[in-house]
Image 1: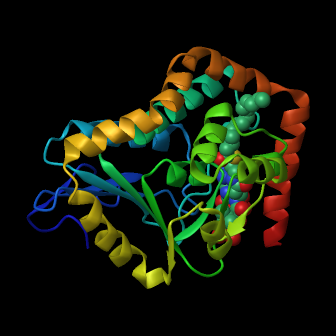
Image 2: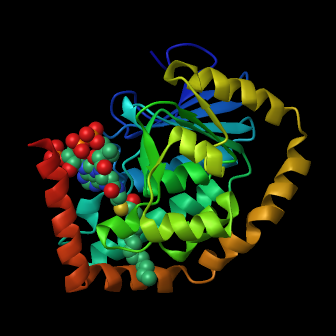
Length: 273
Ligand SMILES: CCCCC/C=C\C/C=C\C/C=C/C(=O)SCCNC(=O)CCNC(=O)[C@H](O)C(C)(C)COP(=O)(O)OP(=O)(O)OC[C@H]1O[C@@H](n2cnc3c(N)ncnc32)[C@H](O)[C@@H]1OP(=O)(O)O
């Protein structure tokens, strides 16, 4: 049970919030859990909640680190909620995209040490969230991670691409994005998409252990270094947020894209029958 004892502080109501934040003020480490069953798909509400949670943690001077995880077994996040992109309105698409931009700017630009505890599948937007952290630990086994957008007939936006480039380099990104490749944890480890692979039960303890190393570094020096490494990519989106949101709404509204998304949704449903 979370949030029942001192020194834990909750920023969300347990069992209600779709983004649960437990702040341990003794260690300075917050755990942020996505909680939108069945697959933590990222809709407008979740992204807005996530953006707000990240902003609050960044402003909390007692907080030094954040672990991004899931409250839903078997899933880190299934990525963007496809239903936000299918048969939606241009206005809703723009609002949805702005919420994604803000959540991502908050995560990639966070002053905190950020670690992803990947205890389940992590396609597309889920992979973006994981890649945007400073360090990734993934559970071994059947779970997969990657930017699979082309398989849906859509295209990973330039800032998804930038983050992947910064994580695994040009050649691997080129293959990964064109193929919409999904990787097992071991494959992801071999190309540097994740930093460590351990059995499921050891993901959280491994993250906690790794955090100790990162928290030994003085915050100011680490933050200046992180900012210097990430500024260019952050500024590229910051300088064209509205254009990017409009471009997304136009692109997603195309008939051909809507047909592809419709077919993909049908294929997801067919898998189950
Ligand atoms: C140059 C121009 C560039 C401009 C930019 C324009 C466009 C790009 C835009 C956006 C980038 C997109 C990013 C994304 O994140 S797209 C989302 C991609 N995600 C996926 O493909 C994941 C699909 N899901 C799965 O593969 C599986 O569900 C799973 C995650 C492996 C889990 O499998 P499991 O067997 O555990 O669950 P189910 O498959 O039974 O799913 C349960 C339930 O959830 C529904 N669902 C799954 N994923 C999503 C999702 N992402 N969004 C909405 N709904 C989802 C699934 O259909 C089931 O629903 P049901 O009603 O049948 O119970």
